[in-house]
Every structure is written in structure tokens, then in C-alpha cells.
Image: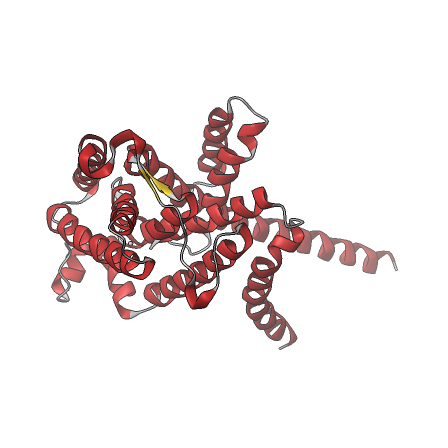
Length: 321
């Protein structure tokens, strides 16, 4: 009974401790603007990775077109603000554009699976990148679009690093809770069923056939074609795979690895992308299920061996007396 209570207590305490860590992180970082900005980047990319994880982890569909949707949301914000409209209208336009684009992408891509789905999403993402790069009269081409200000919800300015971080934390927590509710819902279960048993789910009557962009554009206050490039989609996919698909913590851990390597380790290591590749190789080699579930597996193995050693020591001590 005590063991069960302790496990329940630990399960309830872990989320509270995680939220407390997020809320006090600027204090732990000494209010250092650079590292607070790094934390914001980790969380905004974690939101993107969580969204992609729904496709990769729970639906079994590997996509390389998500950066296109992220960039479309960013461009929608920039273009609407250029007309003189406010941030509220820009955010609504970005959400509307993303939803409409997702619906069009779905019609074109979701009739295929496996490598076919991967190639179609890759092509769609490259089309968005090509439009952003070539339609210079609208997107300003390589020069991109500057966003000169950030929203001030409820009169609270997000211009500084810490206010923007706390806004990112709030959106991240809402996204994480939404994903948790989704994957535990009947529809989430049916989505996993289409991944594992598509024919059976079809027989049961199920037809087997995106907010990070807002954070991205308001963080950088700039949007340009590289946001829609293949490398951006590949990085988000690597975040999901390295951290662990079909888990909620995996994409967050993967986002932390990529962002820290790109923005912190790169200042000290010239070939940081080589080191990042080696990290992914090590994870895939020793933890093919991903960093988070792999670490949990290794912890269980280590704990089991420790218990055996303790039992052996207790047995040996009892025999000697």
C-alpha cells in the first residue's frame, strides 16, 4: 500500500515540479537574456514537435512538410501587420491560413501512406518554400518580412525576453495539455489503431486516410524563406524521432537537444552539426525507441539490478549470522 501511495505521489508531484521549474527558470538562469531566449526557443520548437508527433507517433505518418505550415502562419502575421492591422487580427489570420492550408494538404497527401506520404509532404513543403522565395513582390524574397513589435495581451508587453518566455510557457502548457487530452481521447485511440491495424479499423467504420508559427515569428520578429525550407522540417522530425515518438515528453527533449546544439554548443564547437549527428546516431543505436523511453528503460534495468544486488547482500549477511 505504501509503495502504491508513493508511486501515486510521485506521479502527481512530477508535473507540479516541472511547472515550478519552468516558472522559476529565469531565476535559475540568473535572468541572463541569452539563456532565457534559448529556453523560449526550446519551448516554441517543442510545440511544433508535439504537433508533428501526432502524425509520426500516433498515426504512423512521417511528414516533411510541417515547416511549410509554420512559415505560412509566420508570413500571414507579417503581411497582415504590414496592412496596419493589429496583432489580434494578425493572429486570427495566421490561424485561419494554417487551418486552410492544412485542409488542402490533407486532401492531397492523406490518400497515401509510407514513402508516398513522405514524398508528397516533402513536395508540398518545397512548394511553400519556392513561393516564399520567388514571389518577392508579396514575401520580399530573401529579405523577408520584419515584425517590428510584439503583442501586449491584457496590457502586458512581451517586448522583453522574460515576458515573452512566460507567454511561451503558457502557450506551451496549453498545447501540452491539449495533446495529452487528444491522445487519451477515443479519437486518439482510433488514430493509433489506424497506425497499428488499418484494416481492422476500416472494418470498425474508421476511414484510414498546427500555433508554433505564431511563436516563431514573434520570437524572431522576422520571417523569411528558410523557415519553410526542408532543413526546418527535417529538424522538427529529428526532434520527434530522437526524443521518442508516441510520447509527450520525447518531442520536448528532442527540441532541447537541437536548440541547445544550434545556439549554445555552436559557439564553442565549430563542427557542431557533426556532433549533433553523432548524438542522433548514439540515440538510435542504443535507444532505438528514443531518448525519453530509452532512458526510462535503462533506469528500470539499473533499478532491477540494484534490487538484486541488495537482496543478494541481505541474503549473504543472513547466512553468516
